[in-house]
Image 1 (cartoon, rainbow, N blue to C red):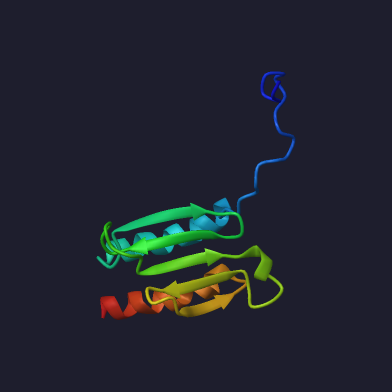
Image 2: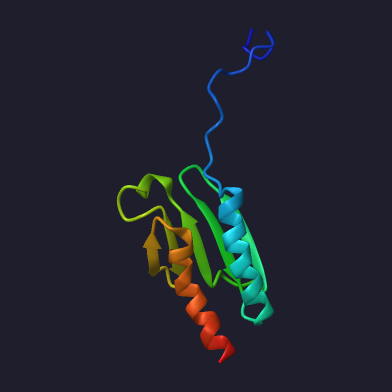
Length: 114
């Protein structure tokens, strides 16, 4: 007789996922809206994984992401839990303050408008 026939379920909890909190998403979506209005960005994707959360930005839906805004809580006491990663995988900025880290992308918005 297997364990499923008795109605018992495995007792191990589901794996935890890292996610962006509402205030973090508000900061990210504010920048995203400005970049869409400037014609720089057109789509985004969210991934909540076991050890990190990722907000990917696309110029076109079928492309690889232009940028990834990543949250790695385990790096909070080291390099910082937030990072902006370019299309080539290079980390453009990293730190513990999301607004400060996102400034690297806001500079591109200023150039796009000029």
